[in-house]
Structure formats: structure tokens, C-alpha cells
Length: 233
Image (cartoon, rainbow, N blue to C red; front, side, top):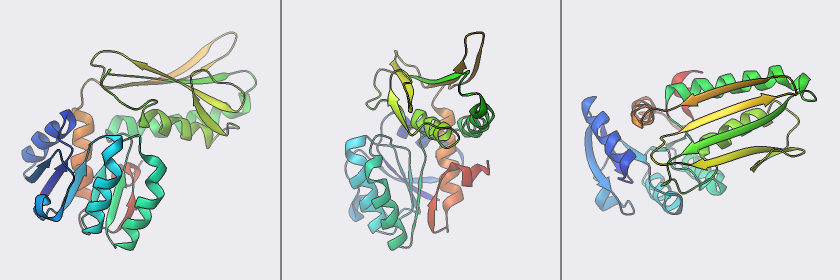
């Protein structure tokens, strides 16, 4: 495949290496806004930029009818507009807050545990926690928000909030520590015990590999997708 990388920070460089190791050609490595001139006619765009640039980056690519794999978080207020654009342009868009196989299995486990714990919500208080490197610009992480949404779908909570769980607001502690790729925990605490599930990323390679797999999977498809479609979980 011919792949254009939009956003060429740490993740972009790792995706570059993995894509080439799987036999793909990188036709553009962009730190600037993508255009028809600098994209070089790719089969797919993998977008890992920053929250301020993501919307315009994705919009430009979709308007050129190029499928987009997006891993940038912190811009999702405009997600519905982007998805409508992808449908209108008869192309494909896949967003995920996290592309690793492990975290997508963790998403499924989180939903199942929330279902099991729902009848015992009086006994157990649920709290989420995420830890990332100090360079991460958004808080909470997109992965933490996805986990919170999984709990909310299977509980009486109506929204998530930063810090401590209160009332119908599911709490997320967002911590920043040097060079932590990503650690996410969901725990249910009672007066007598605690149940915790946790995912710890050791490097960014799991995220990058999943993004390349998503790019391979989406070729020839039309519509709106996520990593559940790719991994079948």
C-alpha cells in the first residue's frame, strides 16, 4: 500500500518503521496540513497529529476521497461532522483512541465487568485512572474516555468528569509522569475489598502496529469503522 503519514512526531516515526517492515511504501511524511500536492496520491492516510490540527487534516483528506485512520485525541467535538463528511464523500474513516490489540481486549473486559458490577453499585464505588507522559496535551486520555463510556453504557452514570467519582459523574484521575506510554486502571472499591483491572503499555509499538493493521484492513472499504471491526472483539 501507499501510505501518507500526517503528523510526524514520535508515533509517526514508529508507524513509518513498522509500515515499511510490512512492505508498504510511505509516500508522504507531513508535519504540515495535507493537500493534494503534498499527499502524493496515497491509498490511505494515517493521522497522528495534535488536537488543534486534527480536524482540518482529516477534512482535507476525506474531501480528496482518501480513507483516513485517525489516532489523534482531544478533537472529538467535531467527530460527527467528520463522519458525515466521510459518508458524503463515499470514502472510509476509522477513529480509535487506542490501536493496540491489548487495549481493545481491555475495552471489552471493561464493559463486561461493568455489567457484572451494576447490580452491586450500592456496595462498590467505581473510579478510573490514567497515567501518561508529560508531553501529552489532552486530559483525560482518549482511551480513558472510551473506558468511561464503556462503564456509562452499563451503569447508572450519565457522564464522566475529571477527578473523583461523585453522584452520576464517573471520575477519571489523569496523572502525568515522565515517559509513561500509557497506563489505564478501572477499580471498584467497597468497604471490605477492591476489584481492579489494569492495562499497562510498555512502548508505543503496540499502538503503531495496530494503526498499520487498520490501514491494511480498511483498503477498499467505505463507511465509518473502529478497532472492534478490525480485531472482531
